[in-house]
Amino acid sequence: MPEGMSVPVRIRPFEGADEAAAVALWRDCGLVRAWNDPHKDIARKLLVQPELFLVATLPQAAGELLVGTAMAGYDGHRGSVYYLAVAPAQQRLARGRRLMAEVQERLLAMGCPKTHVLVRTGNAQVLGFYDKLGYERHEAISLGKRLIPDI
Image (cartoon, rainbow, N blue to C red):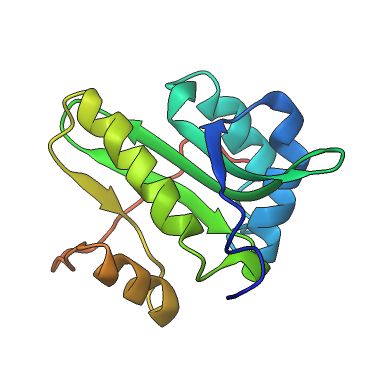
């Protein structure tokens, strides 16, 4: 059995004390980009549907170890999931699957009929993860425009 498999992950809402560990996790998972300040993303999320910002933790002798995150939102039409991350040493232990299941349950409870995720092109491992969760690939192009520069 892989290390950590027998220890159940706890999923709970993000707390302010989780910020440093969450940002470090995002850096370890390659989610942080130079043009996007993760601390500002957290501050913004805490103003809008903070209950949809979840963390996965494991018990430690001195508290909890943050091993995963998922930031979601619902706009009345569809849900979106961002910053889904699982610590590299904790991947392939169903941590990401558990986080996504919890996000989907919370979105469904809000009446959300559909969720979307954005995956960077060429990220085969993550695309495979979402394939296994039943997400379909759509013929669409994602467009974006920054309204507030982070740097």
